[in-house]
Image (spheres, rainbow, N blue to C red):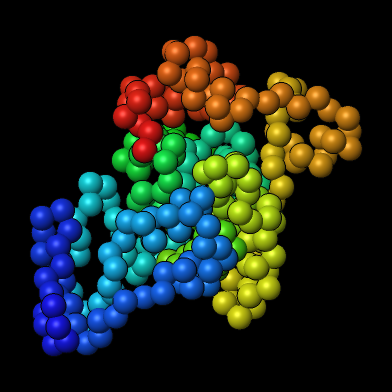
Length: 296
């Protein structure tokens, strides 16, 4: 391969673009990892992929698109999504990489109500994430089931799917998500606790602070023209009151009912009961049907 060569790029056996190579170089991946992810430690799953799995050389140049890649789910361009949004209304975007359970949905309801007369755009990433996460196609099945289940009660919610592979880059990735969602019509963006965060594959320690992404987003909010909305965890305190903010429960001395992710997965695999306060039955049914193939 040399400068001036034309490279055919393919996706799932389909010709999608031609790259005219104008620069070919061997990157300093350690430096790249530190600048992008804030660390060069191989315990960071995406840093490991960068250094140990990706090719030794990078190629840059002019890119000429042939066709849009075909995915196994409906993908809309930014202009197509914007065309579905009512004119003159604020749009609150929510990014996630997991199935939406009850606590997530309660947060979405709060966010939409807090931004008066707004539209809530549920815009999950559906590409590969990290080992142990739910497979993208299975997640889309859960989103579609939840969309149909809630669309009459929550007509202000919109759903679209982003073919994007999470990099688990913490605060810097939160900024990237803000830029992407602005292109899709968002005026506001929800940044939750530890957004795009990950843990060491050896020690289990977090690579980023729980609220680093929120602080980074707020710092650059005016520059990007996107308002950051941030919320603490929603917790379940019983059938009478349902979900409340974690600080509210703590201040009132409420007993919080919990179900860990590990216990949730164990119950899924064992076919045991999963309480309705924790997850939507329609979502649980899809995950159970998928079995172990649901996990990356």
